[in-house]
Length: 158
Image (cartoon, rainbow, N blue to C red; front, side, top):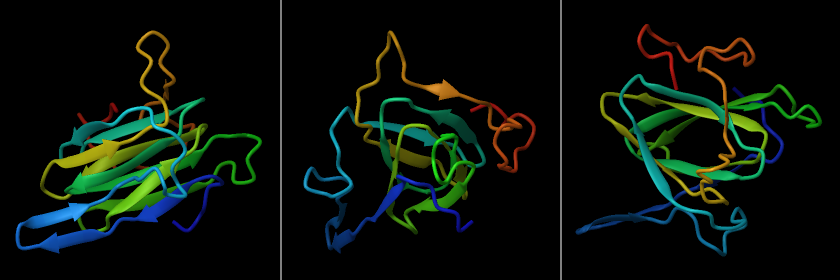
């Protein structure tokens, strides 16, 4: 999918290997993509599992897949956006190390692809507010977003 979404930015991540292993910087405070720090968290997806859809009204999400591979999809739900209704799709992980920055109002989700658990690291601009979460959800198979995750029975809820 070649659509772009206003405000979505990507950063190619460089893997630096040596005889001990490898290092990959994900987000630095001097990167153009950096806004502010909220927290860092990690989540996983088993092969074929979809975690979607959600968006935020306040925070920007910055995320990548550091182990395995994920299909990431974005949907611009901002009615005042010049790219309203556009969808972007990325394949992110060990074979394509990319940081994706998703602005408020853009739905996003991911699916673990391949044969191993995918590890997702997120660095949002705000910490999670347990009392008033800035998180608005739709199910992966919603009719409101024209995207097909290729769901199988038992894998419908994100």
